[in-house]
Length: 250
Image (cartoon, rainbow, N blue to C red; front, side, top):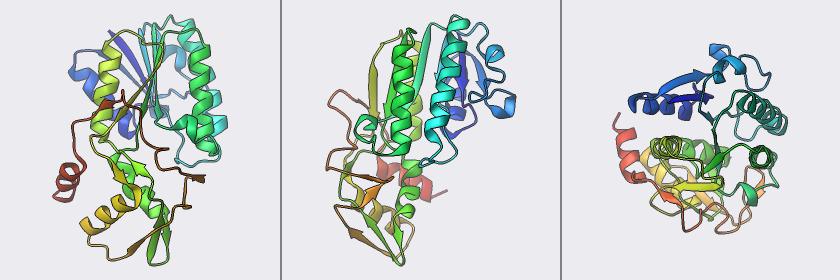
């Protein structure tokens, strides 16, 4: 099967290309560095020629990028047009758990637009919403720095190893279109402020964590369960403690 991965050089995209290739699929690794740009449309016809499956793991340069709306709307429009023109039979996109509850944020509002474009396209599709990756948690904590401490919400989170999200995307790619949204999340719940304390302790960072229920998350206020998936979410296998131990020991 020929699979085009759009956004193939990112953290998820590069792992996804490897996973699909290991599974014996004919993978087209498309990214600006290979002359394929979903925002401008450059190279899309070539990348999607003969592709049965398109996996969209594109992203803006920064998670909280205020230009996200323009990027996802234009990129999504271009990808859908090229997918239709080339007879793609399964459009898969990576999104974020809680997107529909976080539209106060520019970024998540943009992700909602991306999802809606796909749903309205007429293409067979599957949208995979993932919780936040273990690999990005330190960055989220650092964004909450205030002098010698960090101010974070006590909202619940269920982060996931990037590798587990890649496994879910691979399984979806090898199956038939679901024409709906599925969620994938890690095996354990944490409070966001407690997760920060774990990360700081692991790195021997003595700065404190201030719990503040009104603290913002990418400019959005959080209710306790805003970032949690539903009961039918696919559950990853890797526990945060095991991932952290492996990461810190390297």
